[in-house]
Image (cartoon, rainbow, N blue to C red):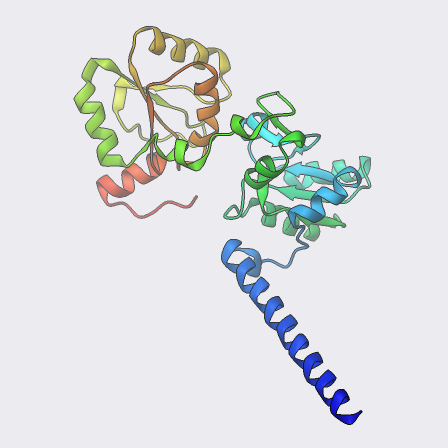
Length: 277
């Protein structure tokens, strides 16, 4: 009897240690997969938890309007993390008592963490972070995803990392392609009016912000008809991923993006100090 009891206790201790080890492994894995989790004191929802609570919470997309309109969680609302964020999230709380779940692009995006932290300090309670972001959500739940106004979608509708990376050139190859193509190239600067400073290619490029749909449509269509290669850059290499969906929809096949945007270009070519993202 004592021998059996001793063996049971031993197995229990082993199981406990295994459980602790597994939990520790999960923590280490989450830290590696989600590098900013340890820097914020916020409530996190994993994808399975968020899915289970989807009908009982309000998803809030804190990215730009353009990103939101390109790819978002179905029934989410858009409150960009800008100077009016606190005002807007407080107004929303007055209208909706459900828990708020903030999300942005994915595991290496800080905006969702910042949104929850700022909302909490502003007195908005019952807030959570879905830090896997729209990238993971769209892959796992295409039936609850909106892509350029279309829902439900198929996983095949999404542009994967491989297809995106194939279109991205580092600054030197990007400039070399511009020089090589001469009159057969069209350059598009999609930075918004606040971000815009020095142009990469001077007067030969077209400067059209993403919110100017009419001018974008006209320029891109002219480029397509003329058979030119389209070179596109933004400020830091973030917006081009979403702009690729637009180009695909417009039937544009010959295009390339500048890695790191204008910030990356000036850092590499002029040796300037790295810009804040």
